Every structure is written in structure tokens, then in C-alpha cells.
Image (cartoon, rainbow, N blue to C red; front, side, top):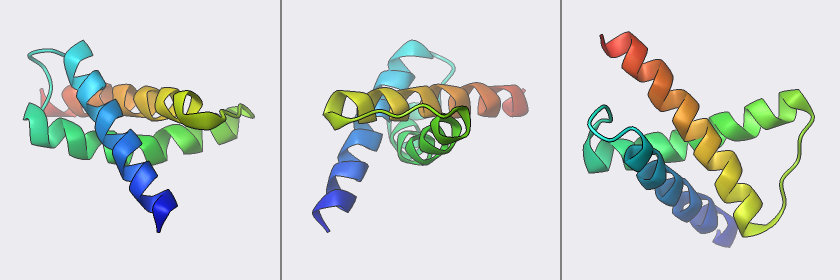
Length: 80
């Protein structure tokens, strides 16, 4: 249960950070937070395919942030 809470916290932080990078092209605060959680899953999957591993809070945050950025980029392409 504690791991799930940390996963959600890291995803929310990553979503907020990704929203700051995509300022004006995101999906609002709540949308970006949700995208951050989904992006954390996507980032973990992408890093796994590439054979990369990240450990600790900062590593997990980087993975989630990269996933959120990729997801926001793809959704902004679809949104147009």
C-alpha cells in the first residue's frame, strides 16, 4: 500500500513538472496531474524497453517526468 502511495505522489509531482514545461499547451492542473500518474507507467515501460533502470526517489521522478513529457507531447499532437 505504501508503494502505491509513493507511486501516486511521484506521478503527481511529475505531472505538475511536465505541465510547467508545456506551459499553455497542457491540460490544466488536474489534467496534468492525471497525465503524470499515467506518464509514470509509460516512463517505466519505456525505460524497461530501453534497458535502463532508475533507483530511489529522484530516479523514479525522472522516469515519471520523462513518461509524462512523452504523453503530454503525444496528446498535444492528437489534440490539434
